[in-house]
Image (cartoon, rainbow, N blue to C red; front, side, top):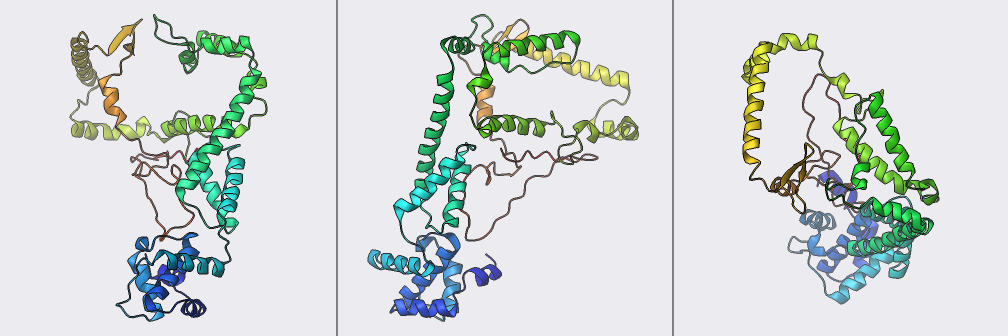
Amino acid sequence: MSARELAEVFTPSADEVEWARGKTHDDQPLLALLVWLKAYQRLGYFPKLAEVPTVVAEHIRSVVGLPEAVVLAEAAERSATRHRSYVRTRVGVAYDVAGVRAVAAKAIRKAAQAKDNPADLINVALDELVRAQCELPGYTTLDELTKKIRTEVNRGFFSLVSGRVDAAGRARLGRLLVVDPVTRRSEYDGLKDVAQAASLGKFKGRLAFLRDLDALGPTEVWLEGIPPGKLEVCVFSYLAAELRSGDIAVAGSDSYANLQDQLMTWQECAPLVEEFCAEAGLPTEAAELTGHYKKLLAETAAAVDGGYPGNTDLVLEGGRPSCAAGKVPSGARRRSSWRRPCMTGCRSGTCWTSSPAPPTSWAGTTTSGPRPAPTRRSPKRSAGTC
């Protein structure tokens, strides 16, 4: 915490010091009362005195001119209750548990019509509580309130849509989840197949695919009245992933331009080929390079084929690899412990977008993410939040 922030945020005014002296009789309660006053003005709630940074307590003690022997310590419960009451009166806040929950619940319920992430809902509640000058409740209180209201709202949407689907529509949707015993794939799994390379035959197949989707039922009728935000969460989550991978580009964008435009031309690469191949230990002649990779491919294929008979996790059906029924490959189990970085690129894997945070903190923090790998014109591939 910088000296400037200490001076601007945690320096009690002469009026505040005079007010605190009129409410206490000893130096230690005086320090505790002033610390709670400045902490509440900063955070919007009363922290435990043991959680207050030492530098804050020492700064306030120095400003007031108290002896160094005076230390910040937890007061008796009766004194602590009285001090909190003094601070609330001073800042003009009423301690109304039911009122605070009502304000938070109203804000969460309204936001849940379009948002679904619990962290987003909690942050909306915090903003509204700060705006209403309410004392902030504990995180657990907001978390439980968010879970309850979010469940109620989503269950209401589900019941609305479910009531519109007739028996025939339910049967058609139910068939999507039936797994074919031969292919071990369901129709729902087939719905997730992406469009293949553009050709007349593939285009006709795609049209048939879309007709099958339309045959599921009048989805526009089923979803009528459902807030677009609920559907947009799915759409933009998928869009963010595609933008990160470069499979989707935004024309004219600096951050999400066409990845192909970022690649070097052959004219730019040609003078660097010999040097690159020497550093990578690769042949520089085309024929030799082709032979080199054919050899590597053949060796890898032979190793894979040699281990296939003993691989009980993998089966080949119609030339396509798939997991054996009821099994998860050991490699997948290993990958499950890998933590993918968050979409904003922070090193920790978590950020403000994925976990709720109070509107203020003892000191501001900044996070910097890893830089993208260097290219001639390296595009920024941070996907943002969804």
